[in-house]
Image (cartoon, rainbow, N blue to C red; front, side, top):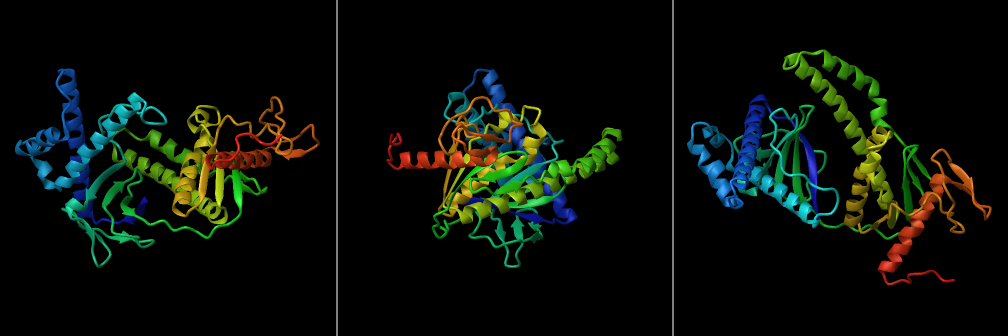
Length: 383
């Protein structure tokens, strides 16, 4: 399995300037290549291949006075920018033809120099490596100080240097990892994700919703008010924008850490994990949009999925149209309309249900049924 390991970088001022040049060169090459392909399409010419683009926007451009500074950075930076454009076109075409699942992907767009998040990628062709002193050596940049939180499981195939909106630098290493199956256990769990509680488990446990963004709203509101008072283009406005970005970064880091802790515990303690396939994009268009984004369900379920694959566990999603909340987990009767304010209800069979726990139990039962069907089980239960 290929995973990414991310670590914090602390480049020197000279290295920050070198990285800024690399970010700018990658952005310009990407935009020049996108412009060339658009112009060829408008002129009715064939689709420009990667080789033709590389010759046009890199090799020939370096010979001109307007783009001579492209030679100041590693050539791999420019080549990877073209690879990103090719991947963007491939995803767009696959989305148009229906081969790509999920939401529709738009056509590639020009990259803005005002974007506060920048990234460049170095592959093995660029001869990057981690020195014996424990520093990643980047071509034309040098040995960058890094804070290691853990060891890499294998030699990285590439590294992506990222500068986020808060001005922090990160190195994201792509490495191949071997599966590490955990000892088998008989426990299985169904998870009902929500807003009142972040997750309710089928065994009755409830994981509280931390509300990281809600807790930081007061600080964030003050930072954004201060930002709105600054003159556009001034240094004070850039400083105020950086302060607001740092608050958002702390919120995102805390949310990600919480998701990692919860997902690791669930995967470690259960042989199979089942969750509901929620339409997060649809819920994000309702009046609960801020709370939905603050919960981060998509990130959490993605962590569960890749950790289950790595540690030999079973992960499955239950159909979102399955009536998990309105179905009695004892007798299977489906009730009528049930507004969201109803948190407990009594079935006609006499069973009293907590709405969320009952939903988690139904998700567990549905996940088990789908798993048995996939393994050759009966399609219908016995009479």
